Length: 215
Image 1 (tube, one colour):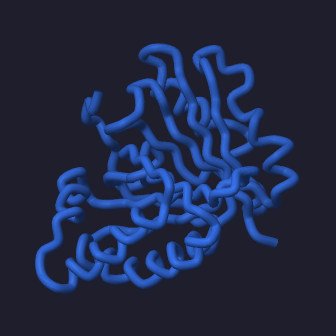
Image 2 (cartoon, rainbow, N blue to C red):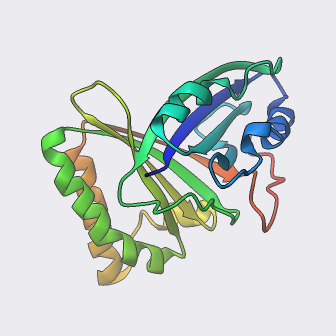
């Protein structure tokens, strides 16, 4: 049975994001038990979100469990002001629940795409990603469909780049190979009705912490 992912945007009380993050990491629900429920990743704001907003992606064994329990993970945390959740299903990636480990610049980009354009949107991603990853030392972590009742298909694309500088660099192609990648990725913006992006760094990285004061 395919795993269900949940995106949580957590608004914390002033100057408490780090303490909330530590409490989330220690939650009993996220202590791995037969790989059923897990903390996929936890991110802090870099650009585009308030300083005291953290982003969580959690993994659940099925849709029913996610709907029943995912809203409860921050209940009782007095430092949490609000939590917004989106239930998500993987499209092309990720293939499993293996969590991202490397520190870097993580871009959360949201799209709303008319259903009739979504097939081409997915094909452009499939065609562009291999050369994008090799050109910019970057990784596409996942592209998820958000459960919603709208006519448009809402998706979340999560991309890791090694640095904020590489995020900018990847927008300015150099040479024919990169130009073709950018052409395919830019075409997605012509297909969607709405898109927005924010960048973050990975609190749960296993290689190195992020101690920079971004905001």
